[in-house]
Image (cartoon, rainbow, N blue to C red; front, top):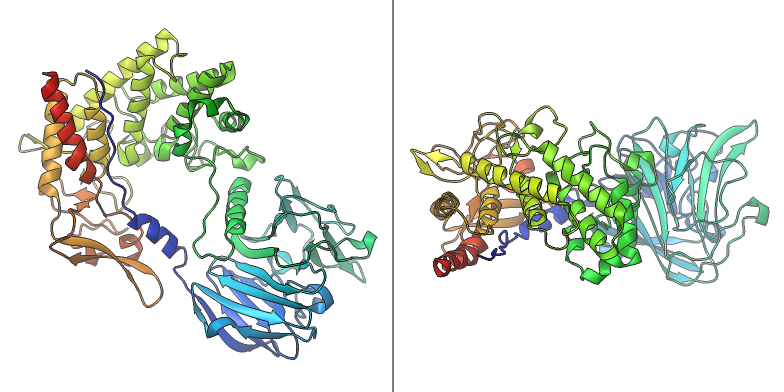
Length: 620
């Protein structure tokens, strides 16, 4: 019998909507206020607060304060001497320089003072800059220019000018600014900078890349006192008299903002690239180069330079045990030691979030297209990792080597174990792109799949002797459903059960036990479907999107993520681990930050299961 390919169920788009909307959970708010004796617009964002000077022909950032209260601009203010030399964006003729009259006027665009975006527009006789204040950044748009201009950040990193203040460019190198400056130009045109004693970093970037000069240096005032550090796009260094040239017209955009200092360099690069690609849109995320979609390219592509370069990066993330980290953009070559997750950091050596299995499947495709031994060797090391990680009972943990806590449970959550089984089944078949695997490992793969199927059948929960469904994770010793995080109880899963059934339905010549397991799992899903209730998104007065359940007799069937083991009642838990049976009783943070409901089984029940049964009947 030919394997029947199955889909894992319909995805629910409400999750993506919430992710984008709640990235802007705190709207931007503008008020007018006096700040250190001058009139300003105070713009409060999620990442910090800008005081934008606006009176007496002045425009520009007087202060940019992070969430901890550190002022990274402090124009005409302490800390340090000569605060009059600081500000942003400090362009030509004092335009955009706090404390200096450039004949500017600044207005609020469309009168909007609160929302996802608040916009200011500053003009004088020569220039018009539009400042877009978003929850996570400020983006400057040039609407009009007479001649050349530049963007110049004069900053006291972390709120104090200290010897250890540093910056990083796209090559991943961390440098300490010097008085002479280190760089005449750099591409891509972005930096991030920080203070070793502060847990925030500031990014400053420009697009598009061009041949206009850039510069950076550390400024010292009389008495060898460190006053500030400077970073510019479009201005030369001291050796050329700080000339402005090369940037004109209205194509150039600058962005600036704060992020947590805990990000790796590659994570910073991905975030900045995302902002530069779409600078004025709320909710923009990092540019991710790695993902499961790379497995769906034309077979010839895997022999291309692009594919090989990605494979080279992927191999560099493989651990010495043979596994790969979760939640890591494997297509970005690691440029710093911190870019490669290490054992104990919560990401290395995982089967969660498509880790290990997807990089192995990718390398197999490149190995098949190129015949290169390096990719085969890396793939085989991954196979040996999967064999070593399997429990004697046939299950796989979320991490191996094992970690304390729920990470060592047999993990069906997010299809971790199912992904392993699908991969090993394909390896055991000996077909492309796995034909290069040796006979011994193919046999090991087949045996591992058999033990995995046995584990699935043994972990299917019975209620009064009747087979039902599976939990998201099961105890590795008792095989009973087990706790994961505080809001993920031992239960039956309306989500993970779908992936398990899809795998079982894809098997060649399923045994009577497999057929019985599928029929029982499908019957359970049909039984626990929620009728007459619709999952909705509503806007709160504070601008956040919130999930609610609304009665609707015409709503499509809905399923809960968790069902109580004995009663099949939908379960909802906050971080306090208290069982609740009413979705509205849990707090906003979990209710709208976690998928307690979904339409996961819909496609399997409507299409895949009937087709599978028809195929079985025709075969018999």
